Image 1 (tube, helix red, strand yellow):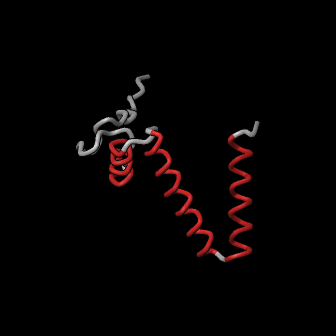
Image 2 (cartoon, one colour; image 1 turned 135 degrees about the vertical axis):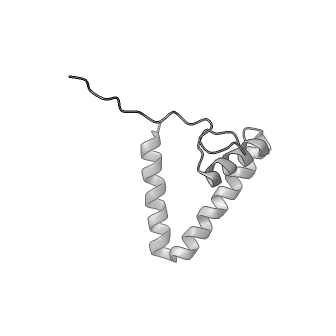
Image 3 (cartoon, one colour; image 1 turned 90 degrees about the vertical axis):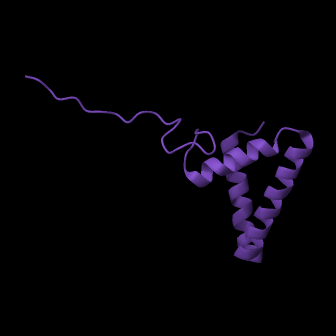
Length: 88
């Protein structure tokens, strides 16, 4: 069985081969097509829902990982660390 790291290395190698053989534009088109078919398969199997995808895109767009979509900045984020004064 192949580990995640080995699979990632294989994909990186194949991407580099595609760039070398056909050019960067063709390699990017291949990546976009692979993503589109991966998403379509996920929707077809039911493992990826449109609501999940919209929430992830909204969170990525707003830069609020883990926050509910439409929440004000800072909601769902850990509190910042505070420094306390040292008493001697």
